[in-house]
Image (cartoon, rainbow, N blue to C red; front, side):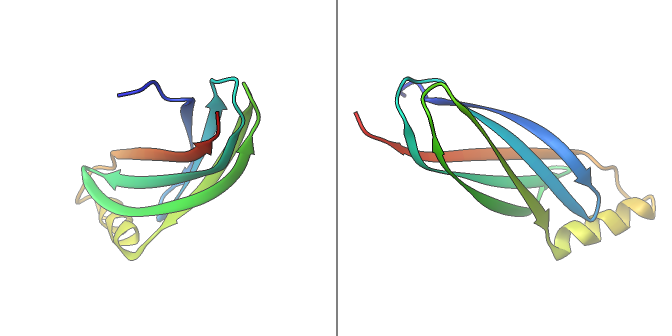
Length: 104
């Protein structure tokens, strides 16, 4: 597998019945990246509860851009209600995928 041109760092916002996820995307290459987009998949206690996407645009060589999106779904809301009732624990995990195009 080839070396990736981007690195990401995830920051959490409010995460209750909706979850705000902010991601810092760094371009590690000396090439301009085009049509950059982010997809976030949220899991609570290992169960998939929702996803969201954000279009970032261009990232200049060695540059940084921020992307953010909010996950909200009925499943996430039901899990939050169960946590408020003391039935489950609240362990959130997130997977991120960054898509981009570049030209040599």
